[in-house]
Amino acid sequence: MGTRLSAALQPVSAPRGEAREAAAEWRGVPSDTDSLNGLDRREDIAQFPYVEFTGRDSITCPSCQGTGRMPSGQVNELVALIPYSDQRLRPQRTKLYVVLSVVLCLLATGLGAFFLFPRSVIVLFDGVRAVTVHFDPVEQRVLMKLTSTLNFSNPNFFSVSVQSLSCQVLYMKTVVGTSQMDNVTTILPLSLAQVNYTVNMELGSSASYLYTFCTMPSIKVHNIVVFMQTSVKSSYMVRTSQNNLESYPYIDCGANSTFPHRSKRNWDPS
Image (cartoon, rainbow, N blue to C red; front, side):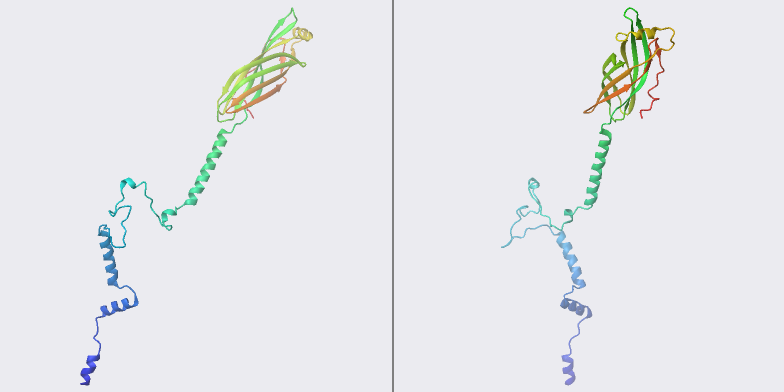
């Protein structure tokens, strides 16, 4: 009798798998069977078509009207709400793009200033090239044509227009000749140019001894010194500049004379 009672009171042993699942469920930890069931449930939900469940407290979506699709006519009118933690609100490499933009802007500004910044045109007096002499024995005058050369250097990356060239020749503080030229030439970017100009001079009207000196046959060289003042106006872009030159050339008033002419490629503007 006692043996039967003790055997009846012993608990019926359950399989190990069921015991493990029961223990896991009691502890709050999902079992392997629940995980597999959860995956199957997600796949089923993904394959399940969109259905609007309307009940007592449910409200039909005002955007899609329960169809699950946005009307094409309202695409530009509807506004989507994005969570603050969405990655689209946090663009990557923002600092890199900002730094590159600033560097490119500074580089473009520097290049523009380097190429468009106006530089002064260099003008040099290259000396007298030819002298033509005529004598007027009636009025005892010496008529001369003085041809000189100016060298131009354009250091800019754009063309320069030489608007005018004026020259005044003095002898013993007396003006003996003038010359004026307009629209002289146009100098190409980063290039050199030479301009010849002629001044008509008259000597002897204020100093009669000059005629005697220039026509005296006993003197082989009849050199005199004149003072030349040359002014050049040039324009480029929105700027106008003026170069003033002064020189004291020696000329022979007794006969015609010429001097070797240097090529513009052989002179150094520096």
